[in-house]
Structure formats: C-alpha cells, structure tokens
Image (cartoon, rainbow, N blue to C red):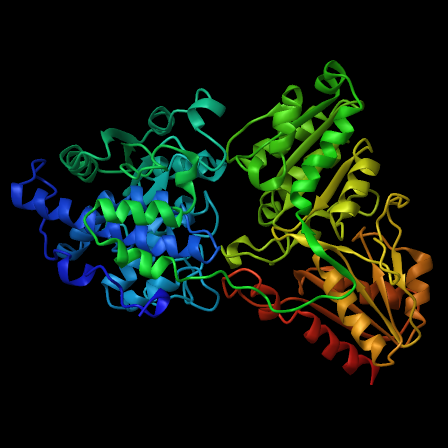
Length: 639
C-alpha cells in the first residue's frame, strides 16, 4: 500500500521505552537512563518528521520544527508523569503549532492509531493545526493563540496547589504581553508553575536576536522574579540538571533551552524554514540518512496529492490572486508617489513577525525607510502605529491575522480617543484555507467597530485584488482608524456579465457606497470579500433558471448606503452571505437596518456557524457557504 493507506512504517509503540524512572532529587542520569531517553528522543523525532511531512505533501503546511525541537523535554516530562503523581500530567504548550507533539502522544497513549497520523491536518481528520479539546481523541487542552496559555496555566496551578504544573513555551510565545502579566501573578502567588522554554531564535519572519534587540528571555523572566536556569537543550545531561533544579525550587521557575531550530535536519536547521513544515524531499533525505529505506517514506509522501476543489465558478476569472499580498503591493504604489525622505517622515509600517503572510514583505523590501520589524506583540505594535499617527499629518500602518483583531479591542478605544491615524490590515480573515482551524478563524471583525455613535470606524473588505488596490489608494491618507480585511486564500477577479473585469482601470472606490453587480426583481443577495464570487456564481446559476435575483457588493461593511438599502429592502427578499461569525457579523445587523427603515422583505443570512474541519478549501462547504448552499437558501427565500 502507498500514501495514507499505508501502515505507520516506524514502530514507535514497539520501540518506545516505557517505565523510565527519573529521580528529580538526583541531577545525574545513569547510563541506562541516558540511553533510554536518547533512544526515545530520536524515535519520536523521526516520527514527527514523517507525519508532519504529509502536511507538506497535501499542501496544508505542518510546522515541523517546534515540535521536533521540544522532544527531549517532552520525553522527560512523560517519564515524570508516568512514575509520579506529583505533577498535573498534561503537556500544556503555549505554541499551538507544536501540535504534532500532542497528536504523537495521543497515539502513544492509544487514543488514536499511529496510522491516523498520516492524515495530519487533512480535512475532517480531526488533526488540525492547533490542538482542540473535544475534537481530537487524547488531546487534553486547546492552545488557542500564542500567549494565552500561561495565564490560564496559572489558574490550573491555583486549583492544584499540591502539584507541579509544567508548561512548554518558546521565544516566540514569550513575546506576547499576556505572558508578562502571567509572570507577575505566578511570582506574587508563588505558584508551582515550571516553564520549559525552547529558545531557538527563530520565528516566522526571522530571528528575534536581529529584529527585537534587547529581548532576552532569561533576563526578562528573572526580572519578574522567577528562578531561571539556562541549559543546552540538546545536551540531555544539562537538560536533566535543569529539571532537577527547577523542581526543587518552591515556586515559579523556568528552564531556557538553547538550541538551533530543528537541530540536525539538513535544509531547515536554524532557519525560518524550520518554523513551518519540512518539505517532502528534505523529509525523505532526513529519514534515509537515519537508516530507514527510502521507499519507507517516499512510498507514503510521494503518493499524497493536494485536494483540489472540482468546481468551475462562473462570473469570475480562472486566474486567482492573493488580496493579502496585494495589500502590500498597493501600499508600495502609494509610497512610490513620495520621496524616501517624505515617506519616512509621514508613514510608519510595523510588522508583528508576519510580513511574509500579511503582505508587508514587499514594503520592507522596497521601502525599508518606513518599515519597523517587530515581534509577536499585537497590542503593543498596534498602539505604536496609532501613536505614530497621533500627529494629524502622520500615518501608522499595522497588520496581522484577522483572528488577532480580538486582541486589540481595548487599544482601539485609546486610538480613537486620541484621534490617531492608523490603517489596519487583517489578513487570514474568514475561514477559507484555515488548516490551523477554529482558533485562527478571523470572524469577529465587527468588534473593530466598537466606538460610540459619535465616532466612526471604517471596515473595508475588497472582493478581489483589483478592488484591494482601489481601496488602499483611496483610503490610505484618510484620517482616523481604518480597517482592511483580506483572506488567506487566493481568490479570482470578479467579472461583469459581459466578461470584463468589474474593478477595471475605470473603477473608483467610494467609501460607504454599496455596489450593484446586477439588478433583480425577485430579491437580492448581499455579499462581500471572499463570498462575493461564490454568491455571484450562485446568483448567475439561478438567473439562468429564470429566477431574477440581484447581487450587491458591500465593500464597506459597517455603513448604511441609504439609496441601496431602500432599493433592496423594497424587493421580495434579502439574503446576506458572509464568512464572518453568523452571531456577530453583518447579517445580525442588516435586518435591523431594514426594520429601522420600515423595510420588511423576507430576510435571511448565512455565515460561519460552527467549529472548523481542518483542511483548506473544505472549510467553506463545511460551513455551508459554498455556491450550492447559497442557491438552496435563495430558493427557500424566493418560494
């Protein structure tokens, strides 16, 4: 058998040495202990390389490096948990991308078969890119996003004062402000929390030692009052001595494990490539160098193919483009109109270790004079951008993932109260192609519009890359706080009924104006962003059947276009289709807007409504937001 039909070719369960007793009062390992630990470490690392590489093969990524790194400390923790009840026996980890560890342990404990690991991050496999409690058998907690676990683990420690609670951390997750607050509480209450920090000097966009000078985890934690021990994470003797020392300490303590990212893996060791998934070729090379026959891994990895959605959309191009990438290109066009000196004086663009993902990389390359590389500190970075824009003639630009908008809501209030000029770009909005799954859904964007009625925020979601260009050009130098959203996925260009591009060279974006794609007598669908081309496909198909349905694009999400709403409100039905949260999105307020104007069409709305299924393009039909589901809803309302 080949591909994912294979049995798991590494005998992890048979070769893993159990019952290893470690004495936390003895800092010296016996030769047998050291041999067993070394054997287990290598075995689990080999397994992680193999099954995370299936994520590369199927195109859903996989984040090999972090999980690979922390195997030595995980093995020590598993041995401690197995032989003593002095600990809360859960591998709490604030780096959710190290989820491969959680799945491997689930298999070791018999909750899932090892063969199931070959379906890593595949849609409906229940093995998404972050651990989710209640979804995956054997997973004991949900990690959420970076910086969210330590404060929560403090609560675990308060509830289990007679036990030690361990938490796996990283130099990336420790950049989040939540962890500073957690450190203060842990010290003040003398909580028995022990941190094991993987300090590999690698995050998504680069090396903290380069972009965040002065950042030293050991000094930071010691400054908060924790006991801190620094060790060579790849030296098992040194690592074990660190464990003995922090276990003996009464109160919060941390081990800083110094190592290169993905040690010993040719091609990704010590590089930002190690943060993500190991390429198939590199995985085969690694496993072959470890003595496994090439056919073992190649037979599996070379026979996995990415899932392709077998659907031909009408009303849009076959060509796709990433609006998140276009955001950066569009900003560059604006900056090209200024001298370098003027740009540096007038504009500041700050990154949160995501420049390659949110479109800022091209700004860094072409306009370094305005660019500030920074760490995983969304709250502080947003406020820095807002502070730069405190001067009425200066403009800050901030960008991160859509899911993290929820983390800066309080800071938004301060920016408004100070009349700051800041343009916010939130990529990875909606749910499309979100293999990291539910915790990374960017679906609560109306939280950004949390000012009072006498203030205004502007929420924009372009329907394709051409409209993104037009929006950035129009709003870049406007005053106040503005938000632009984009998807992780590439999306097509919208076409007019005559086959020309809707947002062509003659298009001009007007904030607050809804755009009629096609008139309809039977009713209207209202959509925006990544749901416009899907809704356009559905509308065109029902129109071919004789149902005269219209389509409205609403690129400004939170302003009422009085002329358009009165037109569509006088029609038989209105259907809002969005990939935002069905509980907090446009659909929840559009009906109110209609009623406030005494407009009473039949009304319906569709949005993201349940936890994710993993995978990529599978997320949209999983939420019932594919064109066929939209057609079903149109027919219901039109009947």
